[in-house]
Amino acid sequence: MRSPPTLKLLPCISLLLTSTAVAASNVVSLDDCPSCDTLKPAIQNVDDCPSCLALLSAFQSIALTGDDAFITTLTSLCIGLGTTDPDVCTGLIAREGPILAHVLRSISITPTSGPSSTAQKLCDALMGMCVSHPITPFTVPFPKPAPAHPKVFKSRGGKPIRVAHLSDVHIDRMYTIGTEANCTKSICCRDFDDSPPTPPTVPALPNGNSHCDSPISLADSMLEEIERLNPRFSIFTGDVVEGATWLVDQAEVTTDLQAFDAQMAAKLSAPIFPSLGHDPAPVNAFARTSSHAMNDSQFVFDTQSAGWEQWIKSAAAFEVKHHSGSYSAQVPGLGLRIVAVNTQYWYKQKPDPNGVLAFLVDALQAAEDAGDRAWIIGHILLGKEDTMEDTMIDQSNYFDQVLQRYRNTIAGMFFGHSHKDQFEIAYSNYSAQTAENAVGVALIGPALTPTSGNPAFKLYDIDPDTFEVVDASVFFTNISESGFQIRPTWNLYYSARTTYGPLVGLPPNEPLSPAFWHNLTEVFVANETAFQMFNTFISRGGAVTPCTGEDAGDCKNTTICDMRAFRSENNCDIPAEGFSLRRRGVDQIGSDADACEGTGLAQMFSRMFGV
Image (cartoon, rainbow, N blue to C red; front, side, top):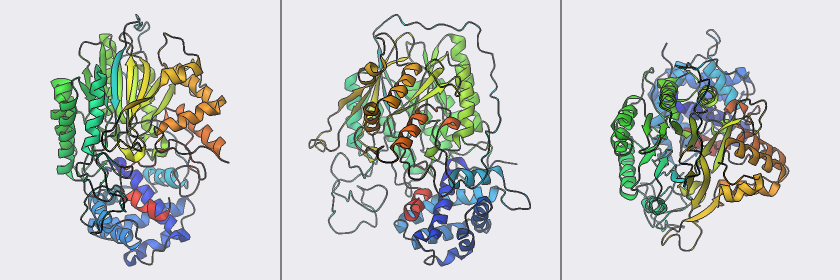
């Protein structure tokens, strides 16, 4: 039986259902949605696992009547409840509705056949109403055992190499100066069809606003600053398209990807090694090779194969096209390989969708055989369940097997997606999380888009012999400064070595190793000032989420726990029973609630129903 193309939209379905159930809890009334009558009995009685499955079944029954009925019902629900603007309801559901309907038709929910693990996992992960399921057992196959005497990579104290890390640019090429920056949609600063004729209350200015995705001028400014810093090469960990997802189609995605490739090529003289983000159409809907595709993602791979070839060369460009967006490329003149993986395929229902893990293993084995080191780059960080990427739990376990096997070859791992300046540590033994057992660390890049804080990028100092990170510096521009709209000024925000090194007692010639980052978490446990400084750094001071008050202890403990959980089964984001992705009342800093990128069905309903 073919696996349903649930893709990354399963979390959206789940939160949609969660949100609808919350609507029945006197948050809103469904009386304004006459076509939703069939949903009311199921919605009004959701309080345990069987009733949650009944709610899924109610949605499934509508999906079984056909896409048109499903789209009509959801659109009526969205508009009737005033969830968001009617054009957003109509556009999003028209694009994503057929995929969601196909997913619901593909899973088993009825008592006669028994609910599928997919259905139970939806209720468990999002509502906390079904028995928790263990990791689906899978042993990643390796072509060779780890060498008995692995190559030792030693630093000779040479001048560090500079590498820039940019992520989550979300460039809005329809950003229009003078339009409303305080609109009713998920992103503003555009001349929408339903924009009121009255003068804007907050006019969009040239270089961006916290309610809007990045204008072209802001991206140009960042790229010019990176060029001024003269890196040996750059990495980009994905997400190009802006957040007006109800309008995004294949033509726009293609244009946006090509335009940003050209923008980077025009501004940066050194090679760039990119990875894919959430940029198919509809957003997030990368189709499996084994599924009955409701959409075709190949256009993304074809576009980026052509656009990236100038940097990654022809062999790697061929891999992008034929390995679902993943590739391995040698950095010119260095014994370092960049292995880019399309993390959007890593969800629960199949051990290795589209062979991404197998590709990763082959690339790392080739690096080991050649005596090279490797960096892994990708979009979605693997440790955090509260991104609604609970689909990552199995895949994170499998990835950890790869890390343990090739940890002598892997010199660095870099991701994006959260829009925040974060890190996650991997251990050889998660039951004994110590500096001695820390075997890997993922460095997560902040975003350019102003919607998540001050625009920023990272600059790494890299040992030229070991290719380990010696320093990680964040450069940012402050959108609140008076001169920002005239010309953004980029400044060093902080250096991890300078700021954190003295707190840890870092020796002068030691890299920022996994042990260093673990020791930093120990500092955060004991030093409240240092922890709150990290909290501010997450958003570059631009959108600080407090971790104080009566729940400060839980907030801090959970946040530090998540720093120590590159393998997501070890994080502390355990949903309590009810309509929540994480524990109610605990504002876990650095949490990532937007798995669907921009406004998706989940976001529409969660705004209305208070999830």
